[in-house]
Image (cartoon, rainbow over all chains, first blue to last red; front, side, top):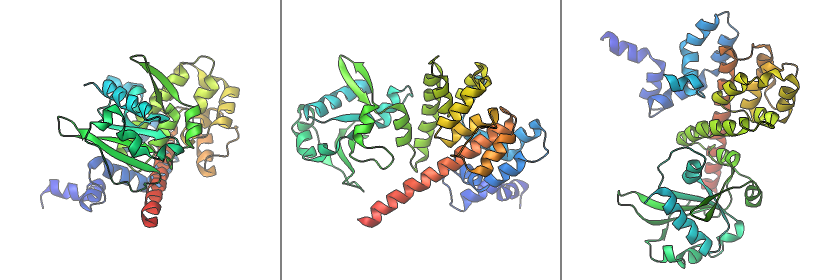
Length: 75
Length: 269
């Protein structure tokens, strides 16, 4: 199997889409986030630096679905 | 025809029919400042309006000459809908009436909290902004997109009131509101933050505030989450991540409650 296809099949959000549990990538991300809220709290308690924490894929996904800050309008 | 002109035609017809009503849905969202293209007209009407509703509407000048037919409602005691035409772009135009909305207080209470505006010398009466936000807490993702934008507007309105900082803090719901409150030094007033936590009803508001007054009493947020928040540095990525996790949990519970209500209605029929 080509590497790109393998990556897609390894992606848990893509798996939610492929399983028919969501109809859009955004909806699939929400499903994924809802299932991993406990992991958010584990990361909050982890020794990651502020920057590492902010850049963690789960936290980045959480913020992208959350309330937007003023800086978003400058991007 | 622009949406406001059409809304005025429809509200004139409802007034002619003698209905007491509040504008909700997309036109209320537009009133509060979110640009929205909508061909539906959503209203909350008083309970006694349901008697002879269709006949009263049919007798109005606007609707007597329109293509007017009742649509299917999955909760006819609480919600009625009527198609009043088809727009040139093919979209159907619907009038929708809530008599009792499972997410909202009774009509009389909502009416007391109404917001009014004047358009072409006519009074338009809208659901209050907090009630409109509540009405959008459904299982539909589109409604939650509106909630996000309306929360920012609610915060901006509250924070623009120089004498209402405790109220503004106690209702804080958006990241932009949080950043504005932080920039204007509102979180530095510890007693006001404590009072705001005491008054706050929404878990997201409490999640924003608690790290600024970790000793404040708080009974309306799950204890384990409150304990995490009390230990966090306010305004850090960790604090804001917990706020978003609380928001997501709230949204998930609200969607499930709306879905359960719909299922109850359907199984009762």
